[in-house]
Structure formats: structure tokens, C-alpha cells
Length: 435
Ligand code: PLP
Image 1 (cartoon, rainbow, N blue to C red):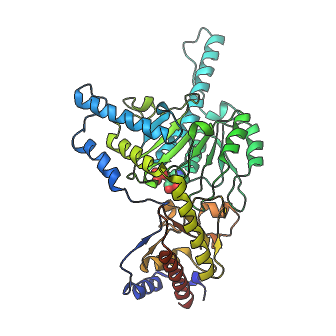
Image 2 (image 1 turned 45 degrees about the vertical axis):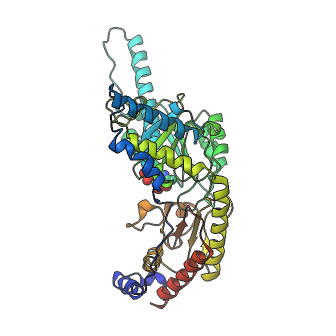
Image 3 (image 1 turned 90 degrees about the vertical axis):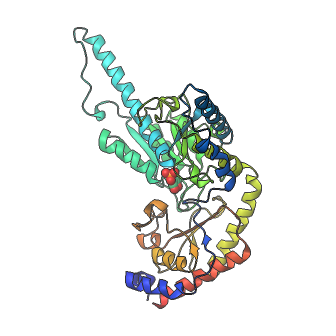
């Protein structure tokens, strides 16, 4: 039988129960691309700003000033580790909010500019009128109301672009990718030269680990006067990120991918690009993200990023060696297993595959029962088990895409762990085929 036919809930439950009895003691967590543990050092650094230095950084008293100083220091350290200036950093509630702020904020700023220019021109030409009505539809403004996004962007970017289409008639242009998920730079260049409000390119893909040619993409877009937002959520704290060196206009980062607690992130911005806030209020974070800043959270972000960047090169060499050993072991243990994404230019602790004639969700459940925790695609799609969008954009069929599993880790794997993963995968495949 095929794995596809073996995914009824009853059968899955029976299968999970069958292996539950000899469930190993120690779970192997291989889902760091979804989220990871917070090191004790990060908790230790942030805790005093929950228990003692708890003042509001906007307050003028001593406690407030202590909190403000800590926030400034965290911002400076965080910026340095991303090749940014302190003034570039807007702290947010995570990668999703940072992506939303960049995509929606840049488009809304363009709409504001056009409205103001339209109103000024109308007032000048009709001096007797006190005010000029604002056009009802954004499509009346400019033919360049276009957002270019790579076809493999995370939903935080893709859905923000879709929102601009739904509410403001922006055209969303998906730039295709090749079979390893690299953005098609010729297509990007063609579309950028037709004019656009913004182009969005991720630095590293969450589903297949491919590192994108962002530097070249930024140059292509800037040659056509199109600003660029880079989603660096999977890259920051994992591979070097140099915001100013890259010359991107905005860049999104998420803390829980590199050892900070969940719900923390940042958007890096250059002052040359206008952004309209999407969270309004007291004007914190240069007016771009109102709300009392999360001081302890900012410290956690700074410390976690600092630790992730220290010794990154050496750690990545070990991670890449583990990754390649894991890829080899899995391909030997499961005939027909196929690595997805770029085999070389990929995140160091990321191995993703499709498997023959099996449903990835069933495989994931079975592996979980054997103490191996992996993902069947992006974390956001789990539970719905939609085919991972990146794999479809790479040209895989829906059935192939639904057979995908992702193994991601931030610590090198021991060879006994690699053997255990490969054996478990072999056992799971055998169990699912035999059902
Ligand atoms: N962008 C990418 C590439 C991601 O992988 C994720 C999360 O996995 C996000 C954005 C969203 O980040 P957050 O979980 O901090 O909202």
C-alpha cells in the first residue's frame, strides 16, 4: 500500500500507540527553524528588568531612566550584530509584525504622499476650493502600485501584500523561483523596470533552507529605483547579516529563531524609505511602532543575538558537517528520499526532503511517537497540512510537496543521533508502507 492511503486517523492512532510503548526517553528536537530553547544566560540577562528595573522607559523618574538606558544599550548591541545603526532598529512583537510593518507601511506611505501631492496640486489649480476630496480608490493614483514578492515568501509577507491588493488595489506580482527555490533574477529585473512600490525577497527560505541571492536582488531593484524589504527571519543569528552592507531598505528579524523568547523581533529601516506606522499610539520607536517598549525583551534579543553571532563561523562549520552527514544517512536509509532546496548554499542546520509515496504528516506523527520531533513544512501550515508553498513554487506536485519533512537544528548532531534519526525514519517508512 502507499502511505497516502494509510493516513486515516484511526490507523494513525493505532500506529502511534504501537510505538508509544517503547518511546525513547530522550526526545530529539529537530524543529529549530520553528522555534528554539532560550538559553539560561538570556533569561538571566533579562530577568532584572522584570523584577527590579521595571520602570517604563518613557517615564522621567530614575527608574524610567534606568530602563531607557538599558533599552538604548540593547538597541545598540542588537544593531551592531546586524551591521545596522542603533537608529535603524524598530523593536516589534516578532517577524510577522516586522514584515507587516515593512510591506504595509511602505505602501501606505506612498499612498499618503500621493494624496498629499494630489491635494496640493488640486488646491493650487482651484484656489477657490477649501479642500480637495481624496480619491476613493488607490488605483486612481499611480500605475506603479505594484508589490513584487518572490514566490516563496513567508505568509507574513505574502499575506501583507495580499492585504494591499484587497484594500488598496495593489497588484501583487509573484517572481518565480527555480527548482532549488532561488529567485529568478531576470524576472525580478524585468518586473522592477516596470515600476513597483516595493520588492520583497527573503534571505533564507524557511521550508527548504536555500540562501537567496539577496545582494544581487537588491542591486537589481535599486537600479530600477524600487526599494527592497528583506525577510531575514531564518537568517539572523544563523548566518551573517549585514543590513547596511546589503543596502536593503528594510529587514525583518525574529528573536525566537536565535534564542530569545517568542513574540520578540525587529524591523531594521533606513531613513531614506518612508514608512507609515500600522500600530498607532504614543509614538514610541520613532513613531513607527507605538506601545510601551518591552525592555526585558529587547535585552533578551540583544544578548541572544550576541551569543548566536559569537563563534558563528566555527559553529556553522560543525552544523554543516552534521547536516551533510544527516542528509547522507537519510538518503541511504530511505530509498527515494530527495533533498529539497540548494544542496550547498543552504542554512547550516537545515535538511529538508520529500519521501516517496508517503504523507509527510503521517510520517511526522510516527516519528514523533519514536521521539523524533520534526516539521512537515512551515510552522504556520502545521495543523492544516497544506502542501508547503515553497515546494509548489519550485515545481513539485501537490503529492510530492505533501510528503515533505524538515529537520532543523542549532546545535551540531552527535553521530549516534544521526544514526537514530535515520533508523527511526526507516522504521516509520516501513510501518507506514506495511499498514
Ligand atoms: N518569516 C519567515 C521566513 C519565517 O520563517 C517566520 C516564522 O517562521 C516568520 C517570518 C514569522 O516570524 P514570527 O514567528 O516571529 O512571527
